[in-house]
Amino acid sequence: MKGGFRNSEKFGFKYHTDLFKNEKGERIPIKRPRIEVVFRKYSEKTNPDTNPEFRAFALVDSGSDVCYIPKQIADILKLERNEENKKESIGVGKKIWTYRTKVYLEIVNKGRRIGVDMVEVAFPEKDPEGIELDINILLGRKGLFTNYEITFNDLSGYMLFKHIQKDNR
Amino acid sequence: MSSAESQFLMSLDRDKYRGKWIAILDSKVIAEGKDITEAYNNAMKETKDRTPLFEYIPETEEEQTLIL
Figure 1 (cartoon, one colour):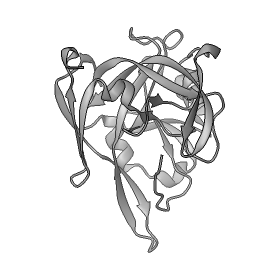
Figure 2: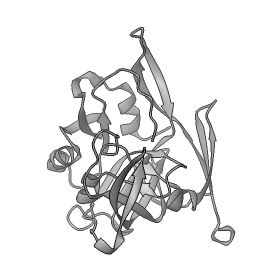
Figure 3: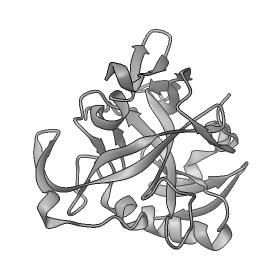
């Protein structure tokens, strides 16, 4: 995978396809707006000991105020827990305590990394059970949608990302 | 075209890894674990200089609706 590109103007993603079985036992594709991303604590080059990074698929979620990562990923990235930045958050009707901090976000498009910014991220004090927030990564409005105008085309399973110039924010 | 790891994920036989996190590098599952931490620690034993793609393989193959 190539690295080092920053803020390409316009690019697209096909929805990520997961295969499931329907009630007839047939394998069917479910397409979701998930994209490949990389998180690390600082924007500088990764270092497994001082600036580790985590690469995974994340759901592009306009319903989330900020980005969200499970606690275990926050631990891997060595993110600080600052009691002053602890806030109550709501996930699928369940209230959870989350810490807020910033991480560096890159999105991976056609095998190349595109640096987004230091973005606000929430992670839980404890991984909540039963509401899938221990396995899902969410890309919320603050951070991703403040850097890109994102158009969803659910019929064709395609997302278009257009970089928002700083003057237009 | 997506990353090599992402393409490999599409063709992966998932039954072997149900309910686990896996780490993929190039066209290979290099590590697995019951949770993110275990998969990450196992992956770091295999590679230090490249970052694998981590993915959770759901326990069930039944269709699930995602509402977050």
